[in-house]
Image 1: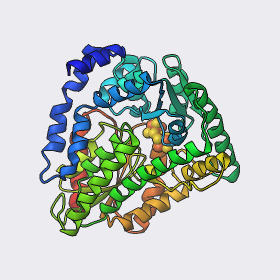
Image 2: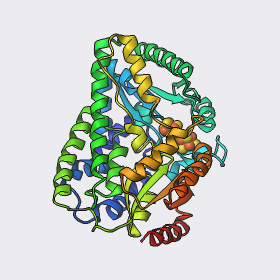
Image 3: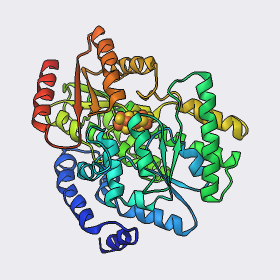
Image 4: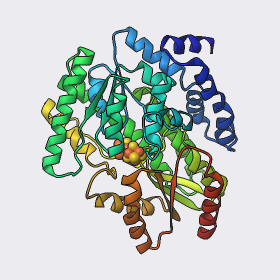
Length: 423
Ligand code: BJ8
């Protein structure tokens, strides 16, 4: 801990406020995660990571920089990590899931803005996140309007590069996005001082395909009934994947899956069979946003799948690393990414179809459609999703929530009633 403090100090972290931030974590983590009975033993690695979330990984990144490497921070799964990795860079996710930094962000951002954006910006304004401070370049993107405009303000505080993501998915848009990846590749080369070669990119693509495959296996195992891992634990694994080294992370997830496979074969569930199986669809839930999962699982349900960027959207598709030269590889990356259905795209019918399909694949009893407050793309798309699900007789509960505790009791009542209706 003493070493951690020196580390944080060297990064310019506001130690006093940072202490307040970390102070509550052990209690919350203990109550939500460690109190679960009969957890898979392979969760120990992820528990350890969560318990030292600003420690050992930050030290690794600092050492990486001391060896001449660069660190990139990203806010969206559309930022092509493969390109960063191929130039010897490390990439970490910077989206904020903490209520404590929201008030600081409201000094420069409107109150009626999604908490994910405010929390992320607040982390920088308050100097509370070592991942932000260690980053040499922060990468934003033009997805929703909130993010797009917030990056203009954030760029006054950090070196920031913005990728322009198209709003449609025609071949023309795909070509445009390929162009954006090329521009980004040039920027990455400039920052790292290293050339991205076809061979290096192919290797990087294999690293991230392996990561997605490992997570896909984790999700496939959640199709079992009883489900061998709780929704809370699965969410934690995915959330930590945004911070961890991708090679080590894949290995740890694969080890966890081995154990889950055995549990599934032995019909050993995280909970007794018969709990209502819930799909959560919508806005991403970034660390440490465990609010809804905790509510569902404390009220007698189990979350078996997340349709979100902290869920199936993150896992979408495979790249084909055999796609020849650098040009072919960039095209393969763009094509794979375009299979991820963020609500920022229009039209977005595939997402609705995908959610319906997930309900069958994961044998769910009901869907909780979750939007962060003021997240217009996901809130608006909720109507179509709900209509499609109801037409197929699948019960839906729509929820809008933020990172605070103010709505906890009301949510609890609604979730409880929903779960009871499914029994
Ligand atoms: S690909 S979901 S990571 S944009 S929750 S900031 S959409 S107002 S996070 Fe996202 Fe990329 Fe899409 Fe995924 Fe805006 Fe909504 Fe906030 Fe969001």
